[in-house]
Length: 589
Image 1: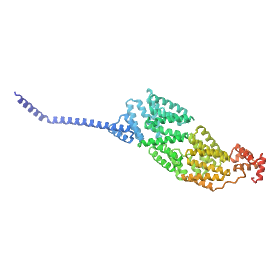
Image 2: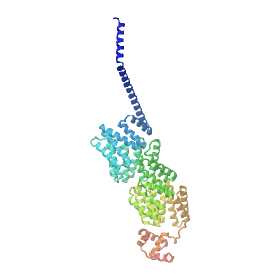
Image 3: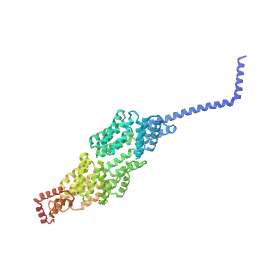
Image 4: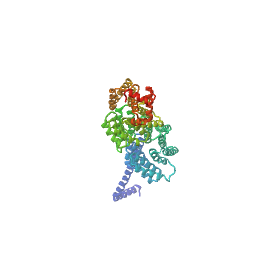
C-alpha cells in the first residue's frame, strides 16, 4: 500500500480516537497546564521572598533599622523565617524600641532551635529573653529564662553562650553590694569572650570589671577599664545593642565617681552616636537625661528642662523604663531651683514612683520654710543612702538643712564624713562640695578665717567646673564670713556678684535670700571679737564650764576651747576670771 494511503489511514484513526476520548485528553491537558502554572507561581513567590529577605538583610547591614524591620517582617509573613533570621529581626525590634515584638521573635527562634536540637543557640535566645525581662522589671521571668539557658548548656562543651550567662550573676553581685564577687565573675566571662573572639562580650565584661573596681575603691584602675571598653565602642567593634549598653553604663560609672569631665565627654559621644542612627530608640532617653543634668550644672536651665521633658516622654512609652525616674527628678530639681514649687512637687511625686526623690524633696521642704520637716526627712535619707554618689549629695544637703535647723554638731559630722569620701574619690566636683560643707560648718562655729579658706577653695573649683549656680551659692557664704569679720564692703561685693548670677539663672529663692542679706546690716560686735566669741565670753562670765557651753551652743568642747583661746589672745587676757571681769566691765553680761 502506498505510503500516502497509510498516512491517511493513521490520521483517520487518530481523529476517531481523539473524538472518542476528547474529554479525557482535555482534562489531562488542563491538569498539566495547572501544574506548570503552580510551579511557576511557587518559583516566582520563592524568588520574591528571597528578594525581600535579601533587601531586609542589606538594610540591616546599612543600619537602616526601621526599614530593615519592615522588610524582614514582610518576608516572615510570606514564609516563616529561619531561626537565625528571627534572631536578627528581634535585634532590630529592640533597636527601634519594639521590645514586645522582640520577645515574641526570640521566643519563636528559641523553640525552633530546640526542635532542631541546637542547644547552644536556644540558650543564646534564652539569655536575651531574660535580659529583656530584666529591662521590663519582670524579674521572675528573667530568672526562669536564665535558669533554662543554664540547663540547656549543662551538657554542652565550652561555648561563648556560657560567658554571657555569667553576666546576670556578675551584675547581681555588683548591684547587690559585693563588688569583689562581681569582678571575679566578670573576669571569668571576659576569659571566655577572649577565647571565642566575641568582642561584644569582651566590651561588656570590661565595663563590668571597671564598675566593680570603682565600687572597691580602686577608682583609677576602674576608670581605665571603662575607657578601654569605650575604645572598642567608638571604634565600631561591637554591635549597636551592646554599644548602647556600654555607653550608658560607662557614663553612670563616671557620674558615680564624680568625674564630670569624663561623663560629659562620653555623653557627647553618645549623643553623636544616637544622631548617626536616627531610628535607634533605647539609648536616646538615657542620653537626654545625662545632657539635662550637665546643662543644669552649667546653668543652661531652660535647655535642661527641655531635654528632661523629652527624656521623660521617650522613657515613659510602654513599657516605661526605670531611667524615667531620673528624668522626672531632674525636672523637679530645676523647678525647685527656679522657685516653681508646685511644679517641683508634682515632678518629685512622679520620680517617687521610681524611688528617686531625694535629697531634692527634703531641700524643697526647706525652701518652703518647713525646716523641721526637711530636717526629719534628711536624717532618714542619710540612714538609707549608701551608694557613694547618692551619699555625697545627701550629705551636702544634710549640712545645709542641719544648719538651717541650728544643729551645728550634726552639720559638722556630715561635713566630716563628706571629707572622708573625698579621700577615696579625689574628684573636683566632690572636692567643691566638701570644701563648701566644711566651710559652712566652720562658719556656723564662728571659726571664720578657717571657713574662708575652705569656701574660697570651693568657689574656685566651681568656677573651673563652669557651675555658676553652685559658685554663687558659695559666694553667699563667703559674704557672711566677711560680714562676721566686720568687712561689710567685701560682703556687699560678694552678695552683689552672687545676685547677678541668680537673676540671670532665674533662681528666685536664692535671689530673694540675697536681697534680704543686702538689706540686712552687719551685726554689732564687741571690739575684735566675733559674734560666736561674744557668746562664749558671756557664757564663761555666767560661770558655765566648757562642757556646758558646748552643749548649749551645739558645738564640741574642743571648739569652745579654741574660741576661748582666741578671746584670751584678742583681749590680752590670761584667765577665765580675767575674761569674766572684762565681760562685766564692758556690759556684756
